[in-house]
Length: 153
Image (cartoon, rainbow, N blue to C red; front, top):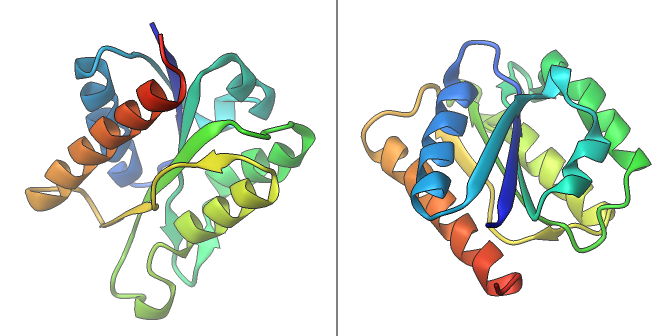
């Protein structure tokens, strides 16, 4: 069974809700999923999994949240070459110019570190509801399909 790690940071619970929906979707697709908070996770743990999803919220003027920043900075210590990954996160459309920019920043860092980023980043305004819940579910399903395709049984 393929193993997936979801690492996230959430200040208001929005990105955590996204992680939970994605976890359920991946589990339904037959994958073994572990969910951890970024503050309680070392980047080297990513190496034990077939695929990794990172969830980061964008704080006010485009900053990566403090709860994710240490993990983000320490990612450089790990060889992510070829690691199957994708990024999701929440933001607030009130901040139009910097809406969910943390998703883009983390994705860019993964590319720099050689990761195989298999999906475009998923961005949600505040808490996922309705259509955004469906988008989170599809994101998990699409990631599962990519992992199964790239790592055949």
